[in-house]
Image (cartoon, rainbow, N blue to C red; front, side):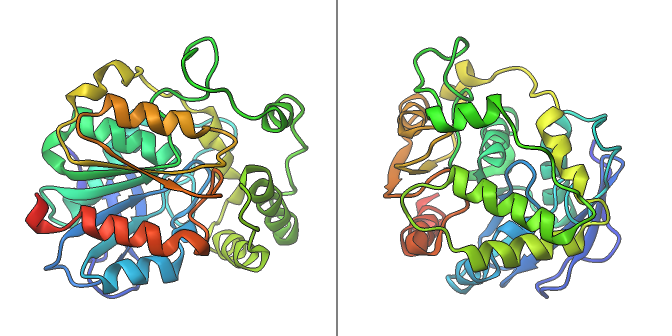
Length: 301
């Protein structure tokens, strides 16, 4: 049983609301007509809901979808935990996603997850199939970076592996400009061949900083336990599944997407040419939005 109730009633207005679920508060926001098919967007690690671009979500809503995004724990205006000492796991993040559905009165929804959010979406498909109308998995993997645990999956790029082995110092999390520079550097490191829209990244990172009382808390996502691997259970997913993946992803090279498409029954794979491991850049929005809208058509369910 999930303790999920809106402390401010979620509505089709674009103002934020707060959902109380699993003993935490989650900031949420909805776009569009609640009578249309609902899409729940799940962000990646260290990313508040701000990274689901306003124009992107507005275009999805204008296509006849009720789009819900939310700040995961330790991001934005959701509950934060001591920096460096999170007391939750990915199982709790999974329960939070279900809690958001509960708060909006949704028995099931179309789930769109990116990176870590894509991993959570896979878990929803396996562990809560009754809550999932469809899955869209973006920039994610069936098993994490290639290595000893996943020898069949291609490893991350050499440049990215070096960056992880020799990480730069953390920014001064109280310094807005330093935090924006940190996220901009990460965008360059994880991007593909599509040029980085630096102005858009700066705006998004700045808003995320301004909305968060403890910006450093987002780094807790890199420290939480991932739960039991579910790759061996991907063939249990019954929801129609769409895999969208950048052809130049340096963290999860394209072979990860091909593995997902093979291992999830009936999955459809669409390459996003030139995209790296990142939120979809403007250059691929037409492809991504059309694919999601077509995938979530009620007549196809």
